[in-house]
Image: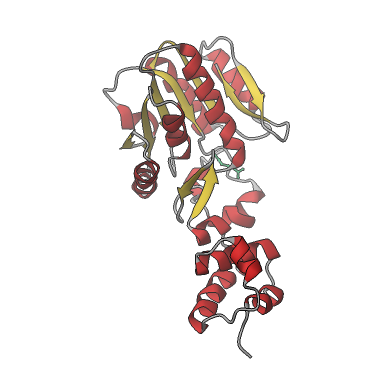
Length: 271
Ligand code: GLN
């Protein structure tokens, strides 16, 4: 018997929402279409393309890679294997940066996003603060290609450069704000072998050490790259806030504080 939308939704072993999202993606239709057309017979090619995506999802592939995008700060960011999938908790980093930029009153504040991945943080800041001059770096040329594509698609002005942390911005004038969502998962954390994380670039997740190494590198290099009155804000793991506050204090930062994400976890620290 020919597959209909209803039969396919009923027989797939994925959660219903994920099945609907994959089918919408294959058919390029809104959810309301699926509901209104649930007895429509599907083309064999459509069923095959859906089945291939469903099989990948059943094998653990993240939805964002299968759909090719993930929403962040209300914008649809393209993602692909090789770039970290933007997380909702990282929106706190953007909101904090935007607030600081707007309160600074600077006519053309200089912003640096270290390890930009898909470009989600840098591009969201650039879109929210058109007065800012936004720079973003990554060590992965593959990530920068995705980030550059996102900037073009979303109409954001961001200057990208490739390199290891501050090596990518040698010779640049000082910045008024530096932000980063660096790899902060400890190399021995069992989560790296579970769920979506198995499919994401390992270098975006862990520093290969205790999870504090990349954060330390960013903190250590910041004073030389910050303009007077400039601030640094970083995302970190649920149990790293006090270690990051200490790093900043020991490096001479004042007014060091941490902010909680929507789950009540101290998620970003800056000063
Ligand atoms: N927040 C991510 C996670 O826990 C980790 C990303 C990162 O290391 N920056 O899955």
